[in-house]
Image: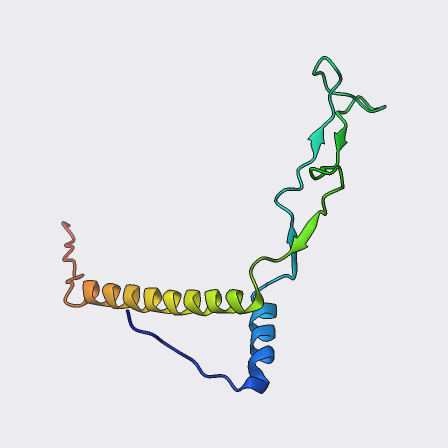
Length: 120
């Protein structure tokens, strides 16, 4: 497989990563996939209801009983995110170009003339 490389001046790397990450929606914090509210049940396995008759939920905890955070640091770094976005950008442009070429080739030489007569 061929390698496509870009060289960015050391002084500009943070600027490039920050700009791409900001423009394409990267977040430093993301929802914690382990943060799942647990329905509270009684000893019979029935839901414990609040004063409005709605089920109650308990915040999730870790194995030590400590509360889990709702958000965690994004496991995808700005650098990884930027690389993914650049790959996606290139793939989308290749796809768009090749679809355009295929449509053009399909239309070339296509006879769209129709002869319609008036029977009267």
